[in-house]
Structures are given as C-alpha cells and as structure tokens.
Amino acid sequence: MMTETELEQTTATPETPETTETPETTDAPEQNKRESENEGSIFQAIGIVLGEVSVSDEGRAMLTIAGKDYPLFYTSRLRRAFNALKLEIKNTGEPTQRLIVYPRVTHFPQRNKPHQLSFQLVGFSKGEPDGVAAQLQDFEFQIRGLWQFIPVCRGPVVSIFRNFNDDRLDYIKKAEPAQKVRFMKASHLPMMWKDSPVKPFRFNPTLTKEEQGHPAFIQVKAKFLPDRSLFEFDALLAPPLEKAPKFLKASKADKTAVQQEKRQNKPKHKPSTGRPNPEAKEQKPTIKRQKPTTPEQKLEAKEPKPTTPEQKPETTKQKPSTVRKRVKAKEQKPEDKTL
Image (cartoon, rainbow, N blue to C red):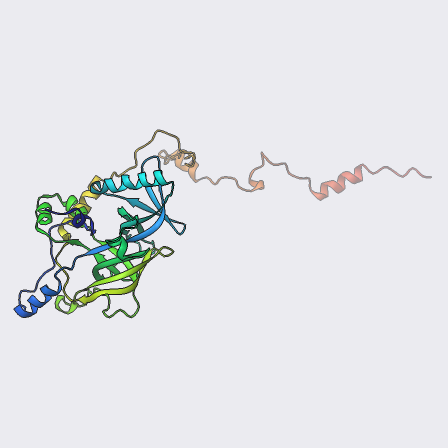
C-alpha cells in the first residue's frame, strides 16, 4: 500500500501511464550498474520555511515571508497537520511558525508572466531532534529531479514527477483522463546553479531522438529566495545520475483529450447577471436609408444639396452693394441753402 509520505512527496499530473523508458538494446552489466545507482533515489522536493500564518474566515491560509504572501494549502490526508497548526497558533498566540512544506509552482504560457509559488503543508517543527526539520535550516530544501529547460520558463528548472509504484499504476489505469493528468502533474522548480557539473537539458527540434539526449537526475540542497520566488543551489546531496528513477508522466493523448474537453465545456458567452453595466456605452440607433426606386426619387437624390450661403437664398440675407449705398447717400445729402 502507498504511504502518506509517498503520495505527497512529489508533484505530478496524470495522463496515460508512462514511465522512464529503458533502451531495448543495452548491455546488461551497464543496466544493472545504473539500477544499483538509482536504488533509494526518488523524486522529491521538501524543505523548511519560516513565516507568518494567517487563516481567513473562509478557511484559506496564507504564508507571509519577507513581506510576500504565498498560498498555503493541504491535502485531505494532511488535514490533521493543518488543524494542529491552527491549534498551536491559537494556544501560543504566535502566528510565525517553522513549517515543513512541499513547494508547488504554476507556470503560464506567456513567458513574460511570472510563475506563481505556493506551499503544501506537511507539518510544523517544534524542535524535534531528528527528521527533515533537524536536517535542514530555515529556507533550505532537498530537491531531487530532472535538470532541464521547459518552454514556459526562461531559466532552468528541476522537474519533480510522481514516483512510480504498482498501486499508482493501477489507479491511473482506471482513472479518467482528467484525473490522470491532475494526479501526475509535475512541478517545475526554477533554480539558479552557476557552474553546474551537468548542463540543463534543452530540447532541440532540429535533432533526431537519438541525438537529442536526455536530462540528468540531480539531488541537491537549495536555498529558497523569497524576494525572487525561486531556489539557488547550495550543495550536492549525491552525484548527478544519467538515468532517473522510474516515474509516472502524463501522455500527450490524455493531455490533448483534457484540453479538448475544457474547450467544449467553456461557455461561449458570459452569462448575464441582469444588472446594468455603468461602463457600457449607449449604443445609438442606426438609421438605414432606403435606396431610391422611382424615377422621381432618383432625380431628387441626384440634385445637389445647397452647401454655400449663395446656394441658400431663403436662409441668408443679401448684403446691399456699395453702389447702392453711394446712391442713397447722394439722395439723402441736404441742399446747400447758403446765398
């Protein structure tokens, strides 16, 4: 059976069950060597953050670190941990807590739009002498995944996939495409790593599958940078591996099916709320002019409309000319009566 830690220690979204492929023609000794190297290796991203926890009236939790707010959520299996955290804050009156979390990153198709980071609660630390809380300092994370570039992120990322096991394989075989994709959704954590011993893999569409290569599996300790919402390499936990542990990955067919279903279910028009929109501009009624059909109407339409004052004698008064003014002035001039 799957343990609670196994279910929550990675991020992924399901599609058709896919695992890391093993080449059909490989030397048995080399393959056995790679498998022995991968023993005990898993996809994982877990760490410690210190921040102020707040819970709204609706039950939504936020984690404030260095003045930035990050959504804090939990799964149904870890509801007890969240309730215990709320009780701890209530009893102590101290909202600032040391939390054990899984990082979750959401990328967007627009590359100029920054990614969004949130944290999934695993537990909180009260000074335990062992475990992850004792192994890591504040804002330190253990990250194990594929070192590569993805189209929706400018910098390299560590991709965390679902670890493979038989129980999960049985589940996704029976699940609907949307459930598979959601279950096997990977989390791609942006990480800065100068002078890395292995270069992050970058897909090249001009190369063949054989020339393409594949990303290396890395196991590192990284520091979380709240001001940039990304991670920075700190130390190697183990040498990079050429072959990654088995993992589950959503298939392109299932992803396509889910996208098509979303488009079909998306309403074409926004439903009307029945309230007037004050920002909406008043639309002026359009007057359609009928084309002239009879000879009289056509003749009337051809006649030019008066546009100048001379063409509008009825509406404008003609000014008297200067000649008429002089004549009138002579007629009105008094006679000289001097003797």
